[in-house]
Image: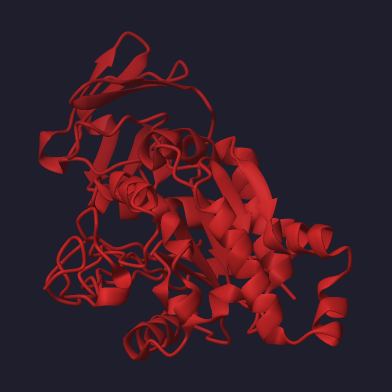
Length: 376
């Protein structure tokens, strides 16, 4: 089956809004702001289709030639494009369109405009009204003002390479857990993410089988699914204090992530739900994601990020991994304190009080209203 993924990323807003969708000849990212649930900064994703025949990385960033220089400054970024000997005599021969997170650059050549660069996914957001450009000898120089001066841009575009570098500064060593119904997909994506981030790839399936000295299928026959859930939960507990790891969990209802009451240790890292869908368009996928999040009956809806998959092809695992990193980036940018909160949650013993972390000394068995030390 052809691989397809889509991602929408969200910022924290008080109301649910859908951004306008444009019909494009190539895949586009779609933004869907959401209201955080349970007082937690949550980022969800939905569907954008990617052609299985496309050889470009996701999202599509067509660049005619890698003939540019890029410099990241404290409050702005600078892009220098080689004009390639084109005889530019008038500013009207150059077209620069910068809009929030997109950039299009065209120059006139023999009576028609030629695209030098076009991306609908800059690495970060800019202030379009403060964009300036000028010609310096044979280069077109464009200065873009950052909306977030603290965000370091590894490159002008959001690509797999820039995301892997950029995510290191944002995640601050926080581990990542991959959950979903398919153990195979969880493992493949976790391995790809680990390579990109320089994290340690881990698999609860492999650890459990090594400890039990038999396969998961054999364990399910010899024991029952509850025993496997408890065993994986014990492994997650031991991994909860690990930093810089990408952990693939068991898929399906025999995995701990499929049980809402077993998420205590999963909250120690950023969780990504790889959710397969039969939806054939963006609107249907969004509605499906909203429904899962609202009713909460699917334990995976506890995840920080949801990435919808339409079909699966191992050859496109990097496409899925890139969508995961982009969504994680947007999540952390919406609340830069999240990695620190995860660290605090771990230091306090992963007591199951995420996201409303209680003070030191809080006794989870005494109830939510208990004060430190268990007294009321």
